[in-house]
Length: 117
Length: 155
Image (cartoon, rainbow over all chains, first blue to last red; front, side, top):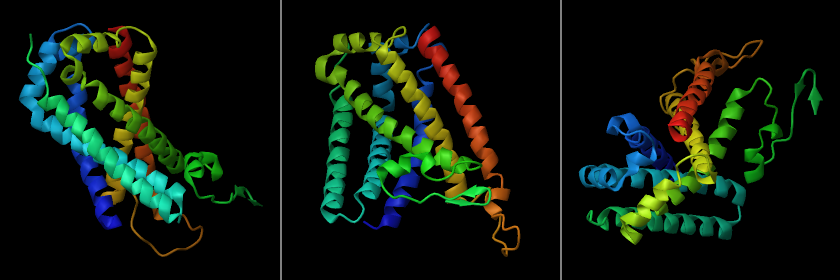
């Protein structure tokens, strides 16, 4: 993939994240749920309802955050690696593996969500 | 190396150098400070996101009882809630500064128009409002971070 394309992906995911993270953080405001503190906004009932209703947004958020984060870190590490081709190759491979692993966990969180007892 | 009232330092490459704002002169250079803070907060957030994805997997992995126990760790002032507060500070600064970067780098707003260089050679970008945006981002970040602190620790 061209460096310019990766930079565009970084910008596109950043724009997506601005909106999605604002929503993700805002739904943790206690007053919205009529509760008194932060931990109460994460009760099983609220989380279950949120995941069932907004799972496409959560998947999109996971994809944007993981790609943006890992790619950002990859950029910093590539600067450090300089022209060492082996190291650059290892960083690129590890980045792809990290993206895949984190996305698998994120998807499992939604797909494997247990029913409320 | 000293030249008049300006101090020029060797521009060292590498990951450590990129995190040290003092490798180049930061006096009158808030852009460099914002760049370094963006990197530091970015690194903090990569770690936080990895932990967040793993910890929110708890209901699927270990059931709702384990989730309730996990969430209770955020109650009161303790190492977990302190780390969460630090991560939220990093998130707020990184997001707001990211919006500034999108405006400046992607849309070329606030950096002035190209002009013929003539003495005293002040780049148009330093005359644009992009620098004011850095100060707005810093102040807004502190205000929103303080509000988050209120929600995390005082509610």
